[in-house]
Length: 157
Image (cartoon, one colour):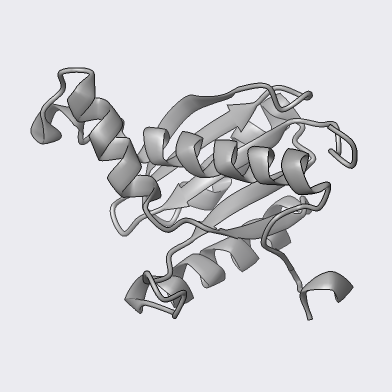
């Protein structure tokens, strides 16, 4: 666990209709779901309220890229959402590749016996858990935070 920055992180899965939110404990042992926030003008305000409860080290926002790592139609939306979140909250934001997080979330929910229809309200939370846990595990195994920060830090340029 050398190089792991101790502290709570909030995982954010940005979607067109909903925003999934997850958190981890300060030691990064486990990511757990918090809530699904409807995507609207008040989404960022709600995330700022959640952050006030957990006092995170940073937000870990999923960056939707395709399997080749290229931008998708949703990439710009996620970047803009992350920038607005960082500006409004004053909390650092880290963008992390979220390839397959939603696919993994659907698979986990299916294996637990839930249908896609009755999972709609929580799949975004589970996707946030998947991306946050992957980010934590990456930092623990490499000793370096994954992804890049907004605004870009020196290591990300």
